[in-house]
Amino acid sequence: TNITCISTDDPVNVPSVNTPPTSSSPPIATLPVAPPANVNDMLSNNSFLVNFEATSKKHVLDELAKLAERDCKIDSQNLLETLTKREKLGSTAVGNGIAIPHANCTDIDKPKVFVAILSNNLDFNANDDQPVDIIFLLLAPNDNGSEHLQALALVSRLLRNKELTTKLRGC
Image 1 (cartoon, rainbow, N blue to C red):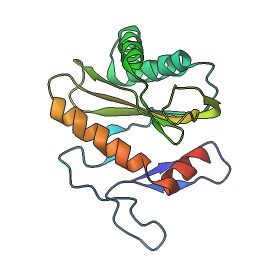
Image 2: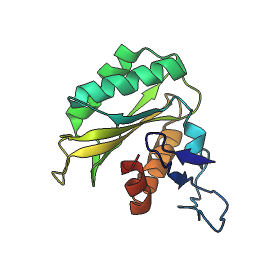
Image 3: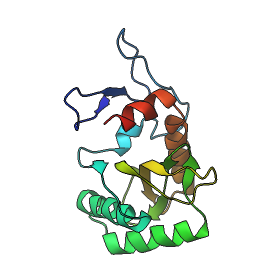
Image 4: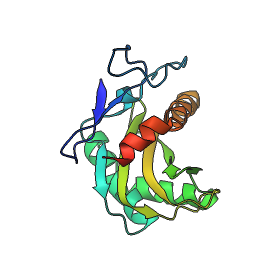
């Protein structure tokens, strides 16, 4: 399965983790982790904000929380409060213009990811002082801490791939 950028005239296919190699799209990474071993398992068709113009960190987190509410039937206001509290503990920006806010939720049974590709750069208080333009919100079941950590590691490793992040920025 490929992630397809839908905001350009010429869509860019981004190979997923564990995609079998083909002549046109080699796999980005094969990761030896317990399920979910593929980020596509955590995405749905409604997981994306592409070319989103965020006015603040809270604005983009609110919109991602609303996506999660529609997809997972969770309360977006409670999620926003949780994400805001987490950001106060320390920025979830991981460097190179990427942030991975994350939270545990009682109302989901498997990890879920929601993605915002920003049309503008946003200050996320990153350690490298770089503004953020790619945000992957990770939600994990409340009762399985190891699954949360495995999913977070998967997303983090995936986003270290410069080819992928370049393609996402081109959406």
